[in-house]
Image (cartoon, rainbow, N blue to C red; front, top):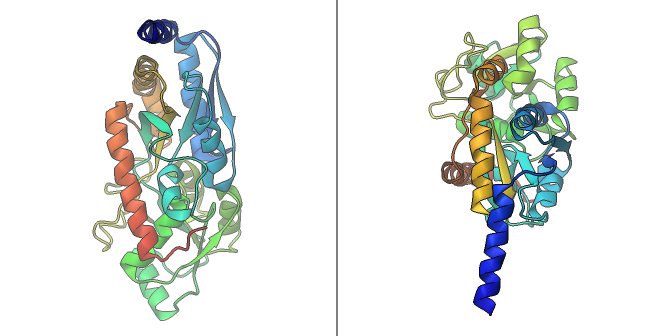
Length: 316
């Protein structure tokens, strides 16, 4: 009898997956505003057209993305509540003593939707250094005088600055904000010296002259700011911080639903019109398989664990 009950249960799951989706899907974004929310809305709009069902982007800021992530960890594993997140997902296990979820066990990777290639090391035009070499020399002569802002302890922008300090033996002082938007406001106003924003955020201000781009954190130069050298080619060999945007489902979501979601995400981001929009933002479409995304996440977690240890970042 028990075997029959289990068989009927799996048949019900398969039938539900075959019809998926039959009602609106909710993307919980790990931030309100900013690139991850923008990419989430972009992807949600594309999936709405393909599914003929509304895909809603629901931004939930707080605690470096933990609040939104926890909502999805505790959601029903039916494919109707998904997490749209970025690097903070892989960083948080190294920054927080205790998370309300298990980063690996409580989620199923769906797809790495897009990557940014890197972040832009930007300075207010009033500071003296005009490139990475001059920045390092300035800090060595006046250690701790320059500041860099981020959206909070443990986000990707913060970790980029810490990796710079580790590799360049500098003492740039971290100034955490409650979100990247107020940090950007203060670097534009000259209240802090530096920041590592995404290309989406940095490019308009660099082109207008309100910010000076000193370097790019990816292995290759940005397509939207090709004149800006990478930090790697500027002397810090191996420097690599890449922004990314990925989709997760709660653990135990049926594989067929995961497959439907992944296939449609890949189709959305790789459509010609979508590729043009992502390219304008300095992003590259990916649409990876769940297995590929799982390998990528483990690599990101290892990288940021190393940075957190070397920078002696105390756990929150």
